[in-house]
Length: 286
Image: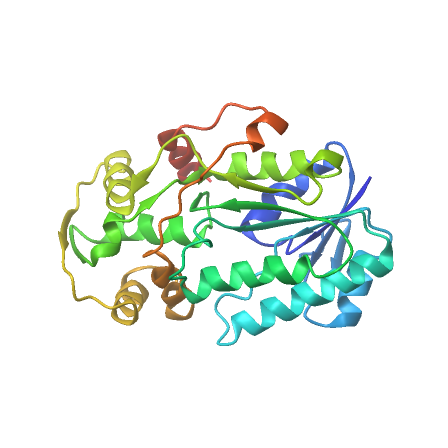
C-alpha cells in the first residue's frame, strides 16, 4: 500500500514515516524536504502541489499545519480543500487526519476551531476520512511540550493564568504514531472519528509539576485571574523557544478541556498506553 504523509517534516510526521515504512511504501511530502529517499517537495495549499503529492497514493495522512502564520486558519482550510479534491481525482481510498481534542467545546479557540474546520474541509470530498483527535503530544519538538519544559528549566517561580487548572489528557508521541499507522488502510476505520489520549487526565499545573520533578526542579506556581492570552503568549515568547505567533493560538486553546470521551481506538489498535513519566523521559532523551 502506498501512503503519502503530508506534513512529513513535522514532529508527528517525522515519527510516523518510519512506523509506516515497516509495512508500506511511504512518500514523505513537505514544503521543505530534507533530501532523504522517498521525499517529495509539494505545498498542498496550492492545488497543483496537492495533486502531485497524492499521485498514485492509496492513503493520505494529513498532518499539515500553518500555525505561526498570521493567516493559519485560511491556509489550513485551503490545504484541506485541495487535498480533498486531489484525493478524489487520484483515487485515494482513505484520508487519515490528526485533529485536536476539545473541538466540541462551544467556546472554541481559533486554533481548535481551525482543527474542526480542517476536518470538515477534508470530509467535503468523496474520499472517506478517518479522524484521530488528540490533546498535548509528549515528544521532542512538540510545541506544547517544549514550552512546558522551558518554563520548568528557566523559571524557579511563575505567574500563571487560570488555564493551568484546565484538564487535559497528554499522550506519548509513540502512541499517537502507532494509532495513526494502525488505522491506515483499515476498512472498519473509514469515516470514523476516534479520541486518542494517554492513560491519565491531569491539569496543566500538574504537568508542569511532574515534568519539574523529573528534571529535579520544583517551580513555585502562582495563579492569577487576569493574565490574558495575549499577555500569556508574550510572556511565553520571552522565556521559551516558541515564538509568540505560535504560542498565542496555543495558549488561547488551553482554556478548552482536552479530554478523550471514548477509547474505541484501542479496540481497533490494541496496545498498552505509555505512562506519562515514561513519555516525558523519552522526549527528554530525544
